[in-house]
Image 1 (cartoon, one colour):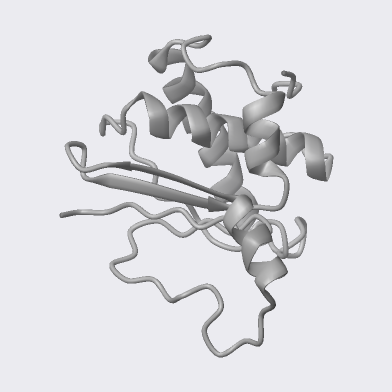
Image 2 (tube, helix red, strand yellow):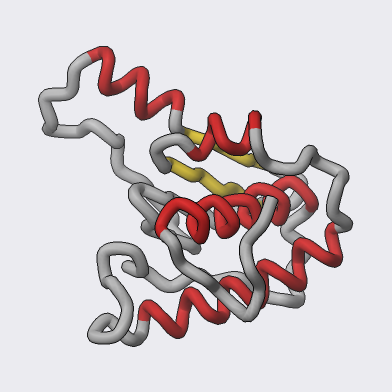
Length: 147
């Protein structure tokens, strides 16, 4: 099964990974910290589409459930178009660490316009970009991020 994994740990994207390491391997992590990590993890998996996205970002899950527009508000085409713009800008910033904070833009995203990732993946990726822009006072593309 081909998997696209997106791990956002303080804004880190990783796509096309075949394996992943446990979050707390080799680290003394308290139960409270593990619960917080679990609370801040959003996993979208669809075996039919063979893509998976994992988002680990403090407060994103809460933001997604309480502030973001509900699923179905945007069309899939709208989400795909915006995600393509956001991913393109993101990848350009990754390649310019002297100009953009390399702690925010660490890894490129492999988001292909010809692949149907499905509504759920596009919805959560789009909302992550909105959350990221609002949280870190960034602007990707020419759009003002709004909810």
